Amino acid sequence: MTMTTIRVSDTEVQVERTLYTFGTKDDADAFQRCLADSSVDNCYRDHPPLSAQPAVPDQQPDDPNRGSTISPSLGGMP
Figure 1: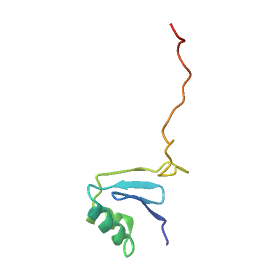
Figure 2 (figure 1 turned 45 degrees about the vertical axis):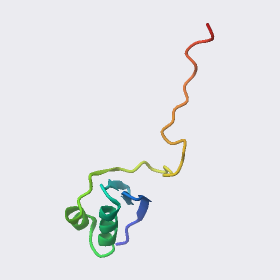
Figure 3 (figure 1 turned 135 degrees about the vertical axis):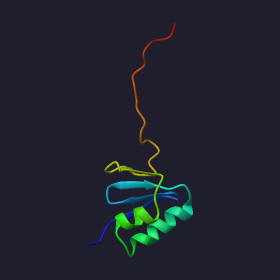
Figure 4 (figure 1 turned 180 degrees about the vertical axis):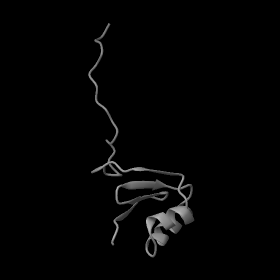
């Protein structure tokens, strides 16, 4: 079975709908190389990430507006 792997940053690798964060670029590289020949479970055990969390669907990693909230002004000029 083919799995979708996206390198989000030097220390982040997204596999399908899960984002794995590593302490160093080398750790992320090793995890990503492992995925070429092994399952996610094996690579997770051999190269444990600092965290694993669900990826936000349709979120663009380089989108400068992600996570921003526009709220109305709560008051006028005094």
